[in-house]
Each structure stands twice: as structure tokens, then as C-alpha cells.
Amino acid sequence: MTAATAQNLPGHSLARLAAERAAKQEALTAWKLAAPAVVLIVGLVLLPTVAVVVFSMTNFELGYDDFQFIGFDNYVELFGDRTFLISLKNTAIYTAIVTPLSVLIGLGIALLIESETRGRAFFRTVYFLPVASLLVAMATVFQYLLHPTLGPVNALLALVGIPGPNWLGSSQTVLISLAIIGVWQSVGFNMVLFLAGLTAIPRELYAAAEVDGAKSGFERFRLVTWPMLGPTTLFVTTISIINAVKVFETVKFLTEGGPNKSSEVLLWTIYQEGFVYLRVGYASAMTVIFLGVLIVLMFLQYRVLDRRVHYT
Image 1 (cartoon, one colour):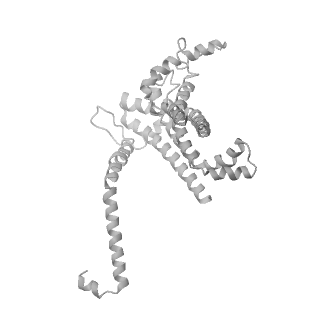
Image 2 (cartoon, helix red, strand yellow):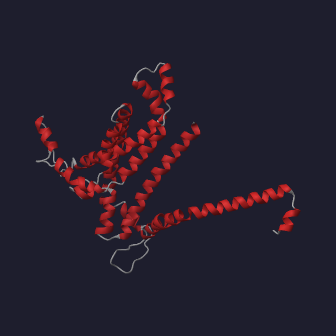
Image 3 (tube, helix red, strand yellow):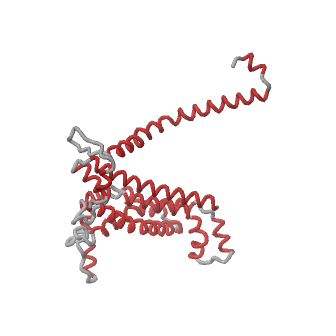
């Protein structure tokens, strides 16, 4: 549009044109600013995901030049694979133990720290240390602690007359032992999230609850703290489930799936198929199942959060 044409337009048309130009310029600036993040997401997330899905429909193996598309044969084989089904079951059991314990203990520690007037920073640091610790370095410590003959855990049990088991070497106790380590890892992170949620609760609500007759700490927790922590609890639970499903390091460094596949979990099975047996296509099919589980968990979290928002 020329300057002469613009001068002949009414005032409201000029204002509309100026607003449209400003909106286009703002959108262009937004795309320029978002371009690096978009490129990284496409290159590091979307393209690898598409590649995994494509490989899952092939019989590709590392070291072989040719491969064929075999459709859903890998997926059909998966659900008849005893090792894969055991890993799914063990992952579910591990998650069922770690998630509720880490959420409840994290909440309890957060409540204790929030009620303490002195030493908050010290206790926050102490309980958060497991999150910052390298599990590779801690593996030796756990092997010593849970050693059947030299470990202090069994020594303490012997003092009260209880024979200690072979924690990491018995099919009956290895998954429970790994779950205890998983709880140890997760509690500090959950505690920090709950502390953030507790800090955001208005203090006036506790005063109002006390006026309404909530005298004890349990009543204040039931009437104020727990309802206000609803979104935080949902988020912490979802993150804890996802982290538990992704368990790998403890299995890799402490048990390697044994004994007798009693600690075989999903990511360890994927690792074995892809990097030990070099069956990339088959491992990719397992990875797609694993990604599907994570997507379902995140979808459920968003749906529940949306319902809470609409309800409130």
C-alpha cells in the first residue's frame, strides 16, 4: 500500500492496518526467538522418536548392512517374550513400592521441616543429598551395607535375633532392596516439591481454620494443607511414577537383572537387546512401548489437572 493510498483511507481503517502490521511483526519476532528451541526439539526429540518408531518395524541389527521392514512382527514377538513380560511385571512392582513410599515420606519430611523454625537449610540440604549424589559412586556403599555377611544391615538384624537375607543375591529380596534404594533416591526431590507447595499456602487459611474449630495439627492438615497440596501431590506422584518406571542405574550397577531375572526391568531389557545382543529393531519396539507408557502417564496427569482447574 502506497503512502497516497493510505492517506485516503478513513481513520479506523488506518488504525486496523497498523494493528495488523504490529501483530505480524510481533508474531515474526516470537518465531525468531523460539526458532532455536524449536530446532533443538525437532532435532533432539521428534526426529529420534520418529527414527525409533521406524526402526521398530524393521529387523535391523548392528553389524548387518541390509534389513527389511517387517511391520508389527516385533510387537507380536514382544508379547510372547518371557523376558519382556518379566521386565514389565518387575517394573510395575518396583513402581508400586517406590511411588507411594517416596511420596508419603517426602511429604512427611517436608511437613517436619516446614514446622521447624531452626535448621531448615541444614535439614533441606541433608535430605536432598541423595538426589545430588552419583549412584555410580554410591553403588559400592549399598553393596557394603546390604552384604549378607559383612554388611551393617544384617549385623543390626542379628543383634535382635533376626537372620538377615542376601538382599541383592536372593530372588525374594532383590527387587525390594532396589525399591528401598529407589525410595532413598526419590524422597529428597519430592520433599523439595512439597516444600514449595507448602510455602505457597496462605497463612490466613490456617488462622481461619483455627477460628472454625480446627485446633489440632491433624485437623489443620486435613482441612487446609492436604486440599491445598492437591495439584502439588498430583505432580509429585506423576513424576515419581515416571522416575520409577525409568529405573536403570541401580539394576545396571548392582544386580544386572539377576538373580534369575528377578530384577530385570524394562530399561535394562531394552539396553540388553539394543547394546548387547545388537537387535536394534527389537529394542526399538520395546522403546516404543516404554514411550507409550510415559505418554499415557503424562496424559492422565494433564487430564486430572484440567478437571481440577475447571472444578475450582
